[in-house]
Structures are given as structure tokens and as C-alpha cells.
Image 1: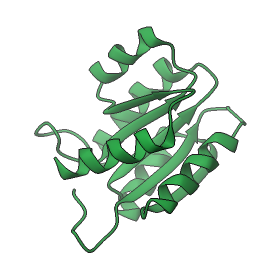
Image 2 (image 1 turned 90 degrees about the vertical axis):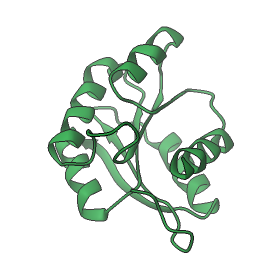
Image 3 (image 1 turned 180 degrees about the horizontal axis):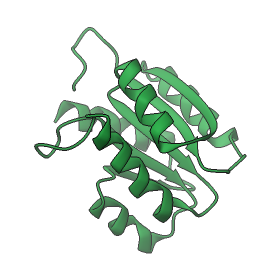
Length: 141
């Protein structure tokens, strides 16, 4: 899925698991909106299947997950599998929604996350401008 030139990118943001800190994801939502993207914030304490179902229903181009609990290596494989079950990932490389994760992610976990199918990894301290640029480049490819 790629947005047409007249339609802005559609991004779904959510917080998987029991992490109850949402200030950062709300800052990201505003930055993406200010960059001209349509943003759907699903909220906190949702499951991977809830996120995938909402992504399919909302016809989004990007799914962004915020995890500050340190459970990214347990939760993101579930997220990838849920997107595949809902027909939003799989097939040809680059086919389907772009999947991002951000939060408390050690440098050593970046490559393993990419290996399981996460397209972009943004540890704490990443700039919102980097995320905007990554999304635009990913959707243009």
C-alpha cells in the first residue's frame, strides 16, 4: 500500500502490552500530524491482534508501536505475526504496511528486530524529524 500523491500517509500508533506511559507517543502523533500525515492513535494496553485489526480497518500505510517496558523482543514478533494473519504483511519484500517500533530499545536489539520484519527502529532520543523522513522514504520506495 502506498498513498497516492493527493492522499496523505495514514499512520496508526499504539502501545502494546502493559506499558502505561504515553507522553512520548502523543508527541510523535502530533509531529506526524504536523508533517501532514493522518494519524490514528489506538491507545495503551492493546494487543497485537487489536492493532492489526485496526490497521486493516483504517487502511493505514504505517503501523508504529511504542514500547518503553523493555518487552519489545517479546511483543514485536507477535505484532509481525498479527499483521501477517490480517494480510497486511508478507509476500514480496516491501509489500504491506510499514512497521515501526520506538522506545527503550538497546542498540543490540536493533538488528534482531529488523531481522523479524520491523522496518524502522527508533530508540529513545530519536528525533521526530527522522521518523517523518523514514516514513516518507519508505512509502516512496
